[in-house]
Length: 233
Image 1 (spheres, rainbow, N blue to C red):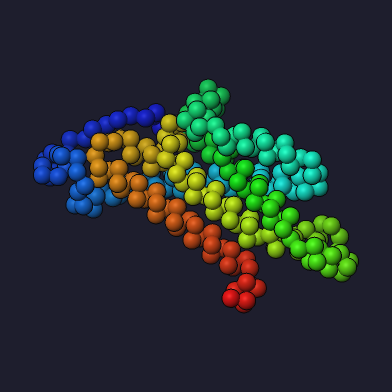
Image 2: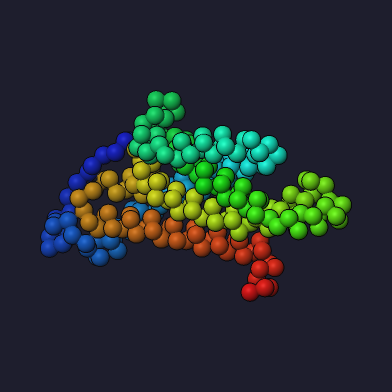
């Protein structure tokens, strides 16, 4: 179990008195210590990916249910909207007595912030499928189930992916606070020496690069899933 936030000031004066001792931005120190950030980075990736996947599965199931029973759209949007507005620090504090310190608490909190964005985008994508496409599928003899999976969902992919992208980049940022729940991540690395600029900048830049890399990965998956759009382009 990872400890809660601890501020730890390292003795670095012997390494570079002119920069490190003054808590400055020290490229040489970063080069020599970049390996220290790999384990927190991997935990950050794990937190982000697991939370987004869990949020997508839950939101997708809710969207399919709301598609058949339209009266559920309001309640689902309301509940997930309330969860989205809870400050992250408060949500971690609420969950700690229930689920304790650790990875699970971090994932539960981060997943709750994904639901509203992904759910709304899935519903928007399905609602924006042209009626002509639906009528054509019905005219071909497709059942409602076949029309959903073979026509509506493929046409809704761009809007669904847009929601997943927003959820992913948001989660990367929020995961930096997951150390409060003992879940680790780059936030844990930042807090170990919060007065040292090189430490803060390195962990922050890794967060930004991670968000950009995951965003590009999702875009690549979208292109692979929509070959007809590549042909049109």
